Image (cartoon, rainbow, N blue to C red):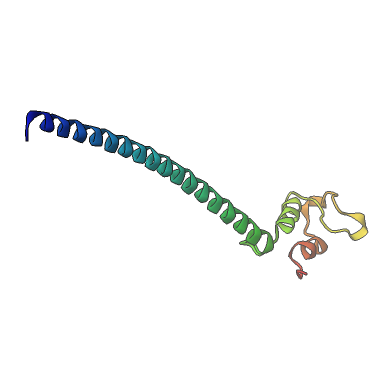
Length: 115
């Protein structure tokens, strides 16, 4: 192999090396884009799972919360504990219970048979 052939071979290998380097850079850029997109999708997926879990827990709490009372009954219970009637006997709803005396009708509204 003479000097000219040797020089041409090196130039050829150098050109092939540049092409491979450009191809590797392109593949690296595409891989980086895919990894970033994957990370975004994983975060979004996690947020969606958390939101679904929140909605599921809220649904179960509204239907049958820890104390066995629905959210609306818990609100009535809170009003009752603050000293107000929650029953509608003699239009007493919302009026103050005298000396915070217990009211069987209010308790029936809060704790009575659930329909």
